[in-house]
Length: 255
Image (cartoon, rainbow, N blue to C red; front, side):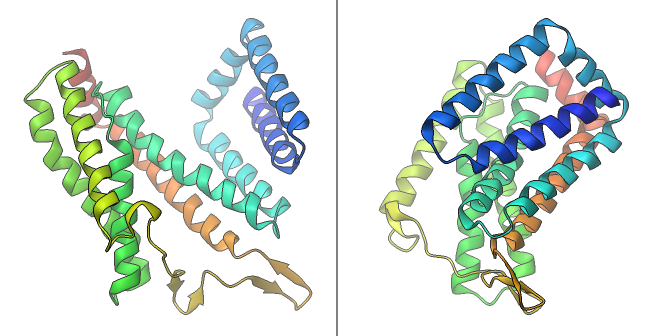
């Protein structure tokens, strides 16, 4: 467990230093050092030890990874821009988990991943802007509609093989992009202006005040939601991988 613990601690500290850097030369230097460190760790066999630690103590190290993310957000508690970046990373991580499930487990090339991501986002945006649907239900509804349309796209994908299946997803991605660009109701190329979420009377677009002396960025509200979504998505993917569904996906990939 120690190699995994030290790796998570190092990644957390490195992430904080990188996010705090403002000069371009410093950022480039930090990125170069990270690349050299990873190459050296691979050459010395350190990465194998870290991988074994995560395989043996997945739950414990997963909890430490969550603490690392929380520590990073707490360090920049009043920095709107940095917290926006952290939230973006968490949301994109959720999207990549879906791509990993499709391409890594099932072996299905999907170039329309961003389109399904957009379907969920625009569905949530429309519900927030034009309906009285409780905000607590907006995100699940957006995810459900994206999954529903994705299940419909599976039909032509499964009727083709190899590169032709990938072409189907590319065509869908282009159609979706064109649809958004010409649709003025959805904001066209500029996108939509969406009001802030409000759950149980708590406005997500208001800064958080502690004791009247400390003011936290309102992005911490969205950080909590993004982190919970990532945890739920990760647990779901791991459960699917270790179930009969995962076995079927492996069989599909090996076929």
